[in-house]
Image (cartoon, rainbow, N blue to C red; front, side):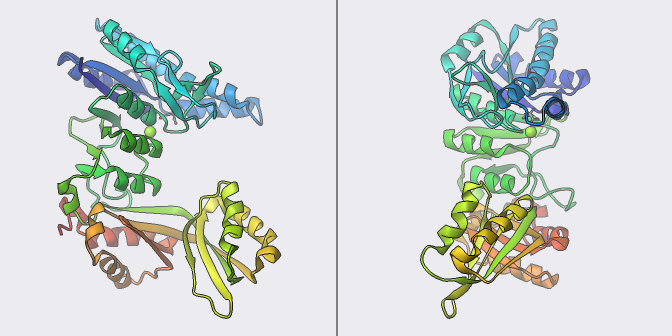
Length: 410
Ligand code: ASP
Ligand code: MG
Protein backbone atom coordinates (compact mmCIF):
# COMPACT_ATOMS: atom_id res chain seq x y z
CA UNK A 1 0.00 0.00 0.00
CA UNK A 2 1.19 3.52 -0.73
CA UNK A 3 1.12 5.77 2.32
CA UNK A 4 1.18 9.57 2.33
CA UNK A 5 2.07 11.49 5.51
CA UNK A 6 0.67 15.01 5.90
CA UNK A 7 1.07 17.26 8.92
CA UNK A 8 -1.05 20.35 9.59
CA UNK A 9 -0.09 23.05 12.08
CA UNK A 10 -2.20 24.94 14.59
CA UNK A 11 -3.35 27.74 12.28
CA UNK A 12 -4.46 25.14 9.73
CA UNK A 13 -6.82 23.41 12.19
CA UNK A 14 -7.90 26.43 14.24
CA UNK A 15 -11.58 26.34 13.26
CA UNK A 16 -14.15 24.46 11.19
CA UNK A 17 -13.56 26.51 8.08
CA UNK A 18 -9.80 25.86 8.15
CA UNK A 19 -10.34 22.17 8.89
CA UNK A 20 -12.53 21.98 5.78
CA UNK A 21 -9.56 23.28 3.78
CA UNK A 22 -7.36 20.70 5.44
CA UNK A 23 -9.88 18.06 4.38
CA UNK A 24 -9.45 19.09 0.74
CA UNK A 25 -5.69 18.52 1.08
CA UNK A 26 -6.27 15.09 2.60
CA UNK A 27 -8.87 14.10 0.00
CA UNK A 28 -6.42 14.52 -2.86
CA UNK A 29 -4.04 11.62 -2.03
CA UNK A 30 -7.00 9.67 -0.64
CA UNK A 31 -8.87 9.89 -3.96
CA UNK A 32 -5.72 8.83 -5.77
CA UNK A 33 -5.95 5.58 -3.84
CA UNK A 34 -3.33 6.24 -1.16
CA UNK A 35 -3.66 5.56 2.52
CA UNK A 36 -3.14 8.80 4.44
CA UNK A 37 -1.62 9.48 7.83
CA UNK A 38 -2.68 12.95 8.91
CA UNK A 39 -0.71 14.37 11.84
CA UNK A 40 -2.33 17.33 13.57
CA UNK A 41 -1.23 20.06 15.98
CA UNK A 42 -3.50 21.60 18.57
CA UNK A 43 -5.67 24.51 17.40
CA UNK A 44 -3.52 27.64 17.46
CA UNK A 45 -3.34 29.20 20.92
CA UNK A 46 -4.55 26.04 22.63
CA UNK A 47 -1.16 24.77 23.84
CA UNK A 48 -0.39 28.21 25.31
CA UNK A 49 -3.80 28.30 26.98
CA UNK A 50 -3.23 24.91 28.60
CA UNK A 51 0.28 25.82 29.77
CA UNK A 52 -1.12 28.99 31.33
CA UNK A 53 -3.77 26.93 33.13
CA UNK A 54 -1.08 24.65 34.56
CA UNK A 55 0.82 27.68 35.85
CA UNK A 56 -2.35 29.09 37.39
CA UNK A 57 -2.97 25.88 39.29
CA UNK A 58 0.56 25.31 40.40
CA UNK A 59 3.70 27.43 40.71
CA UNK A 60 5.66 24.36 39.74
CA UNK A 61 3.36 22.03 37.77
CA UNK A 62 4.15 18.35 38.03
CA UNK A 63 5.87 17.57 34.70
CA UNK A 64 3.97 14.35 33.97
CA UNK A 65 0.61 15.97 34.74
CA UNK A 66 1.58 19.02 32.67
CA UNK A 67 2.16 16.71 29.69
CA UNK A 68 -1.11 14.93 30.31
CA UNK A 69 -2.78 18.34 30.25
CA UNK A 70 -1.11 19.96 27.22
CA UNK A 71 -1.43 16.82 25.10
CA UNK A 72 -5.23 17.28 25.15
CA UNK A 73 -4.88 20.08 22.59
CA UNK A 74 -3.98 17.56 19.90
CA UNK A 75 -6.64 15.14 21.10
CA UNK A 76 -9.29 17.80 20.45
CA UNK A 77 -8.16 18.66 16.93
CA UNK A 78 -7.81 14.99 15.98
CA UNK A 79 -11.24 13.96 17.26
CA UNK A 80 -12.93 16.90 15.53
CA UNK A 81 -11.11 16.33 12.25
CA UNK A 82 -11.91 12.61 12.26
CA UNK A 83 -15.61 13.56 12.68
CA UNK A 84 -15.41 15.75 9.60
CA UNK A 85 -13.89 12.95 7.53
CA UNK A 86 -16.37 10.37 8.78
CA UNK A 87 -19.21 12.63 7.76
CA UNK A 88 -17.84 12.37 4.21
CA UNK A 89 -18.03 8.59 4.46
CA UNK A 90 -14.27 8.15 4.76
CA UNK A 91 -13.07 5.23 6.82
CA UNK A 92 -10.82 6.77 9.45
CA UNK A 93 -10.07 7.01 13.15
CA UNK A 94 -8.15 9.26 15.50
CA UNK A 95 -4.98 7.79 17.00
CA UNK A 96 -3.37 9.28 20.11
CA UNK A 97 0.30 8.90 20.96
CA UNK A 98 -0.20 6.02 23.38
CA UNK A 99 -2.46 4.21 20.91
CA UNK A 100 0.01 4.20 18.00
CA UNK A 101 2.11 3.78 20.18
CA UNK A 102 4.79 6.42 19.82
CA UNK A 103 7.25 5.35 22.51
CA UNK A 104 9.43 8.04 24.06
CA UNK A 105 11.80 8.46 26.97
CA UNK A 106 10.34 9.98 30.12
CA UNK A 107 11.76 13.51 29.76
CA UNK A 108 8.37 15.19 30.21
CA UNK A 109 7.99 18.37 28.20
CA UNK A 110 10.91 17.50 25.91
CA UNK A 111 10.66 13.77 25.38
CA UNK A 112 12.57 12.03 22.62
CA UNK A 113 10.98 9.43 20.38
CA UNK A 114 12.58 6.04 21.00
CA UNK A 115 10.45 3.73 18.89
CA UNK A 116 7.37 3.62 16.68
CA UNK A 117 5.74 0.26 16.09
CA UNK A 118 5.31 0.15 12.34
CA UNK A 119 3.37 -3.12 12.36
CA UNK A 120 0.67 -1.70 14.59
CA UNK A 121 0.26 1.35 12.34
CA UNK A 122 0.15 -0.81 9.22
CA UNK A 123 -2.49 -2.98 10.85
CA UNK A 124 -4.61 0.08 11.52
CA UNK A 125 -4.09 1.21 7.92
CA UNK A 126 -5.42 -2.14 6.75
CA UNK A 127 -8.60 -1.39 8.58
CA UNK A 128 -8.90 2.36 7.88
CA UNK A 129 -8.02 4.55 4.89
CA UNK A 130 -7.05 7.58 6.94
CA UNK A 131 -5.43 7.73 10.38
CA UNK A 132 -5.72 11.08 12.13
CA UNK A 133 -2.76 11.03 14.48
CA UNK A 134 -1.99 13.38 17.33
CA UNK A 135 1.31 15.20 16.93
CA UNK A 136 3.51 16.37 19.81
CA UNK A 137 2.71 13.44 22.11
CA UNK A 138 3.96 10.01 22.99
CA UNK A 139 4.02 7.55 25.82
CA UNK A 140 6.82 6.33 28.07
CA UNK A 141 7.59 2.87 29.44
CA UNK A 142 5.47 3.55 32.48
CA UNK A 143 2.41 4.18 30.25
CA UNK A 144 2.47 7.89 30.99
CA UNK A 145 1.79 10.55 28.38
CA UNK A 146 4.79 12.62 27.25
CA UNK A 147 5.17 15.64 24.95
CA UNK A 148 8.02 16.42 22.59
CA UNK A 149 8.61 20.15 23.17
CA UNK A 150 7.11 23.17 21.41
CA UNK A 151 6.61 22.63 17.71
CA UNK A 152 6.96 18.88 18.30
CA UNK A 153 4.24 17.84 15.86
CA UNK A 154 6.74 18.37 13.04
CA UNK A 155 8.95 15.76 14.65
CA UNK A 156 5.99 13.39 15.16
CA UNK A 157 5.19 13.60 11.45
CA UNK A 158 8.76 13.06 10.27
CA UNK A 159 9.24 10.18 12.72
CA UNK A 160 6.05 8.51 11.47
CA UNK A 161 7.16 8.99 7.86
CA UNK A 162 10.52 7.43 8.75
CA UNK A 163 8.89 4.51 10.59
CA UNK A 164 6.61 3.55 7.73
CA UNK A 165 9.25 4.49 5.12
CA UNK A 166 7.10 7.05 3.31
CA UNK A 167 8.87 8.85 0.46
CA UNK A 168 7.79 12.30 1.53
CA UNK A 169 6.45 13.98 4.64
CA UNK A 170 4.33 16.99 3.73
CA UNK A 171 4.26 19.69 6.40
CA UNK A 172 1.39 22.11 5.81
CA UNK A 173 1.57 25.47 7.52
CA UNK A 174 0.45 29.08 7.18
CA UNK A 175 3.44 30.21 5.11
CA UNK A 176 4.26 29.18 1.51
CA UNK A 177 7.59 27.57 2.43
CA UNK A 178 11.10 28.45 3.55
CA UNK A 179 12.35 31.86 2.46
CA UNK A 180 15.84 33.08 1.58
CA UNK A 181 15.53 35.33 4.61
CA UNK A 182 12.86 36.75 6.91
CA UNK A 183 10.26 38.38 4.61
CA UNK A 184 9.33 40.77 7.42
CA UNK A 185 12.83 42.20 7.23
CA UNK A 186 13.51 42.05 3.56
CA UNK A 187 10.73 42.47 1.01
CA UNK A 188 12.92 40.81 -1.63
CA UNK A 189 12.94 37.51 0.30
CA UNK A 190 12.04 34.66 -2.02
CA UNK A 191 10.58 31.23 -1.40
CA UNK A 192 13.20 28.55 -2.00
CA UNK A 193 12.25 25.52 -4.10
CA UNK A 194 14.62 23.33 -2.14
CA UNK A 195 17.14 23.43 0.67
CA UNK A 196 19.45 20.79 2.13
CA UNK A 197 19.02 19.38 5.63
CA UNK A 198 22.25 21.03 6.74
CA UNK A 199 21.24 24.43 5.41
CA UNK A 200 17.83 24.09 7.01
CA UNK A 201 19.43 23.22 10.35
CA UNK A 202 21.47 26.41 10.10
CA UNK A 203 18.46 28.47 9.04
CA UNK A 204 16.25 27.03 11.77
CA UNK A 205 18.74 27.50 14.56
CA UNK A 206 19.06 31.08 13.42
CA UNK A 207 15.38 31.80 13.78
CA UNK A 208 13.59 30.70 10.62
CA UNK A 209 10.79 29.22 12.66
CA UNK A 210 9.15 27.00 10.06
CA UNK A 211 10.16 23.58 11.32
CA UNK A 212 11.14 22.28 14.72
CA UNK A 213 14.92 21.74 14.52
CA UNK A 214 14.64 18.25 15.88
CA UNK A 215 12.37 17.25 12.99
CA UNK A 216 15.08 18.27 10.53
CA UNK A 217 17.69 16.27 12.44
CA UNK A 218 15.32 13.32 12.32
CA UNK A 219 14.65 13.79 8.61
CA UNK A 220 18.38 13.95 7.91
CA UNK A 221 19.13 10.84 9.95
CA UNK A 222 16.40 8.75 8.29
CA UNK A 223 16.59 10.44 4.89
CA UNK A 224 12.96 11.59 4.83
CA UNK A 225 12.22 14.27 2.26
CA UNK A 226 10.17 17.02 3.90
CA UNK A 227 7.93 19.27 1.80
CA UNK A 228 6.98 22.44 3.68
CA UNK A 229 3.97 24.11 2.04
CA UNK A 230 0.87 26.18 2.62
CA UNK A 231 -2.51 24.77 3.61
CA UNK A 232 -4.14 27.75 2.00
CA UNK A 233 -2.76 27.46 -1.54
CA UNK A 234 -1.91 24.80 -4.11
CA UNK A 235 1.54 26.15 -4.87
CA UNK A 236 4.44 23.83 -4.18
CA UNK A 237 6.46 24.90 -1.16
CA UNK A 238 10.07 24.15 -0.21
CA UNK A 239 11.53 20.66 -0.33
CA UNK A 240 14.02 19.91 2.44
CA UNK A 241 16.19 17.05 1.29
CA UNK A 242 19.69 15.68 0.91
CA UNK A 243 22.20 17.52 -1.16
CA UNK A 244 22.20 16.98 -4.90
CA UNK A 245 24.26 18.26 -7.79
CA UNK A 246 22.07 21.24 -8.68
CA UNK A 247 22.06 22.54 -5.13
CA UNK A 248 25.79 22.74 -5.19
CA UNK A 249 25.51 25.21 -8.01
CA UNK A 250 24.01 27.84 -5.73
CA UNK A 251 26.72 29.63 -3.82
CA UNK A 252 24.53 31.05 -1.08
CA UNK A 253 21.02 29.85 -0.24
CA UNK A 254 19.89 32.15 2.52
CA UNK A 255 20.59 34.80 5.11
CA UNK A 256 19.65 34.12 8.73
CA UNK A 257 19.88 36.29 11.80
CA UNK A 258 19.59 35.96 15.54
CA UNK A 259 18.87 39.01 17.63
CA UNK A 260 18.81 37.04 20.84
CA UNK A 261 22.56 37.23 21.42
CA UNK A 262 24.99 38.75 23.89
CA UNK A 263 28.78 39.03 23.82
CA UNK A 264 30.90 38.14 26.84
CA UNK A 265 34.63 38.92 27.12
CA UNK A 266 37.16 37.79 29.71
CA UNK A 267 40.02 40.29 29.77
CA UNK A 268 43.60 39.39 30.68
CA UNK A 269 42.92 35.74 31.14
CA UNK A 270 45.83 33.54 32.23
CA UNK A 271 46.84 31.58 29.18
CA UNK A 272 47.65 28.12 30.45
CA UNK A 273 46.42 24.61 29.64
CA UNK A 274 42.95 23.93 30.98
CA UNK A 275 41.52 27.44 31.26
CA UNK A 276 38.99 26.97 28.47
CA UNK A 277 37.77 23.79 30.09
CA UNK A 278 37.51 25.58 33.44
CA UNK A 279 35.40 28.31 31.85
CA UNK A 280 33.13 26.34 29.58
CA UNK A 281 32.47 23.20 31.63
CA UNK A 282 30.37 24.97 34.28
CA UNK A 283 28.46 26.81 31.53
CA UNK A 284 27.76 23.55 29.73
CA UNK A 285 26.58 21.99 32.98
CA UNK A 286 24.01 24.76 33.21
CA UNK A 287 23.01 24.07 29.60
CA UNK A 288 24.05 27.51 28.43
CA UNK A 289 24.58 27.45 24.67
CA UNK A 290 27.92 29.08 23.99
CA UNK A 291 28.77 30.06 20.44
CA UNK A 292 31.37 32.01 18.42
CA UNK A 293 34.30 31.46 20.77
CA UNK A 294 37.37 33.53 19.89
CA UNK A 295 40.65 33.62 21.81
CA UNK A 296 43.27 36.23 20.99
CA UNK A 297 46.97 35.32 20.68
CA UNK A 298 48.52 35.70 24.10
CA UNK A 299 50.95 38.39 25.21
CA UNK A 300 53.05 37.81 28.32
CA UNK A 301 51.00 34.76 29.21
CA UNK A 302 47.69 36.65 29.12
CA UNK A 303 44.93 36.66 26.56
CA UNK A 304 41.35 37.84 25.97
CA UNK A 305 38.56 35.36 25.36
CA UNK A 306 35.26 36.39 23.74
CA UNK A 307 32.13 34.35 23.06
CA UNK A 308 28.39 34.72 22.66
CA UNK A 309 25.48 33.32 24.68
CA UNK A 310 21.69 33.72 24.39
CA UNK A 311 20.65 37.02 25.94
CA UNK A 312 18.47 35.33 28.55
CA UNK A 313 21.54 33.53 29.92
CA UNK A 314 23.78 36.57 30.36
CA UNK A 315 23.17 37.11 34.06
CA UNK A 316 23.75 33.48 34.90
CA UNK A 317 26.87 33.39 32.71
CA UNK A 318 28.36 36.49 34.35
CA UNK A 319 27.57 35.18 37.82
CA UNK A 320 29.20 31.84 37.06
CA UNK A 321 32.30 33.42 35.55
CA UNK A 322 32.65 35.89 38.38
CA UNK A 323 32.73 33.05 40.87
CA UNK A 324 35.64 31.56 38.89
CA UNK A 325 37.63 34.79 38.75
CA UNK A 326 40.42 33.72 41.14
CA UNK A 327 40.41 30.06 40.33
CA UNK A 328 40.77 30.70 36.59
CA UNK A 329 42.57 34.01 36.78
CA UNK A 330 41.38 37.01 34.78
CA UNK A 331 41.17 40.77 35.37
CA UNK A 332 37.85 41.85 33.96
CA UNK A 333 34.52 40.64 32.67
CA UNK A 334 32.83 42.62 29.94
CA UNK A 335 29.47 42.07 28.24
CA UNK A 336 27.38 43.64 25.49
CA UNK A 337 23.71 42.86 25.08
CA UNK A 338 23.17 44.93 21.96
CA UNK A 339 24.57 42.52 19.41
CA UNK A 340 23.10 40.21 16.82
CA UNK A 341 24.35 37.46 14.55
CA UNK A 342 23.86 37.63 10.81
CA UNK A 343 24.75 34.51 8.82
CA UNK A 344 25.22 33.64 5.18
CA UNK A 345 24.31 30.02 4.54
CA UNK A 346 24.92 27.78 1.55
CA UNK A 347 26.35 24.36 0.78
CA UNK A 348 27.80 25.87 -2.40
CA UNK A 349 30.34 27.94 -0.50
CA UNK A 350 32.10 24.75 0.51
CA UNK A 351 33.90 24.63 -2.80
CA UNK A 352 34.23 28.30 -3.58
CA UNK A 353 36.34 31.13 -2.34
CA UNK A 354 35.32 34.76 -2.27
CA UNK A 355 32.03 34.42 -0.41
CA UNK A 356 33.42 35.89 2.80
CA UNK A 357 35.16 38.80 1.10
CA UNK A 358 32.00 39.63 -0.87
CA UNK A 359 29.99 39.67 2.36
CA UNK A 360 32.54 41.80 4.23
CA UNK A 361 32.76 44.28 1.35
CA UNK A 362 28.96 44.63 1.26
CA UNK A 363 28.78 45.29 5.00
CA UNK A 364 31.70 47.73 4.82
CA UNK A 365 29.98 49.70 2.06
CA UNK A 366 27.09 50.23 4.48
CA UNK A 367 29.50 51.19 7.25
CA UNK A 368 28.49 48.21 9.38
CA UNK A 369 31.26 47.22 11.75
CA UNK A 370 31.88 43.49 12.25
CA UNK A 371 32.57 42.65 15.89
CA UNK A 372 33.31 38.96 15.51
CA UNK A 373 33.41 36.44 12.67
CA UNK A 374 32.99 32.69 12.74
CA UNK A 375 32.79 30.22 9.90
CA UNK A 376 31.83 26.64 9.23
CA UNK A 377 31.88 24.75 5.95
CA UNK A 378 28.50 26.09 4.92
CA UNK A 379 28.08 29.22 7.03
CA UNK A 380 29.74 32.57 7.69
CA UNK A 381 28.47 34.40 10.75
CA UNK A 382 29.16 38.02 11.65
CA UNK A 383 28.39 39.53 15.01
CA UNK A 384 27.26 43.13 14.62
CA UNK A 385 25.59 45.92 16.59
CA UNK A 386 21.96 44.80 16.72
CA UNK A 387 20.60 48.11 15.51
CA UNK A 388 22.03 47.26 12.07
CA UNK A 389 20.47 43.78 11.84
CA UNK A 390 17.83 44.68 9.30
CA UNK A 391 20.22 46.70 7.15
CA UNK A 392 22.79 43.89 7.24
CA UNK A 393 20.22 41.25 6.26
CA UNK A 394 18.99 43.34 3.33
CA UNK A 395 22.52 44.23 2.26
CA UNK A 396 23.71 40.62 2.23
CA UNK A 397 20.54 39.40 0.53
CA UNK A 398 21.23 41.89 -2.25
CA UNK A 399 24.98 41.24 -2.39
CA UNK A 400 24.32 37.58 -3.21
CA UNK A 401 21.40 38.42 -5.51
CA UNK A 402 19.08 36.14 -3.59
CA UNK A 403 16.03 37.88 -5.01
CA UNK A 404 16.76 36.38 -8.43
CA UNK A 405 16.16 32.68 -8.02
CA UNK A 406 18.79 30.00 -7.39
CA UNK A 407 21.54 32.45 -7.25
CA UNK A 408 25.02 33.41 -7.16
CA UNK A 409 25.65 30.61 -9.61
CA UNK A 410 29.26 29.60 -9.37
N1 ASP B 1 0.84 22.13 19.89
C1 ASP B 1 2.25 22.08 20.12
C2 ASP B 1 2.81 23.50 20.21
O1 ASP B 1 2.08 24.45 20.11
C3 ASP B 1 2.98 21.27 19.14
C4 ASP B 1 2.93 21.76 17.71
O2 ASP B 1 2.06 22.55 17.36
O3 ASP B 1 3.76 21.35 16.90
O4 ASP B 1 3.97 23.66 20.41
MG1 MG C 1 5.07 24.59 14.14
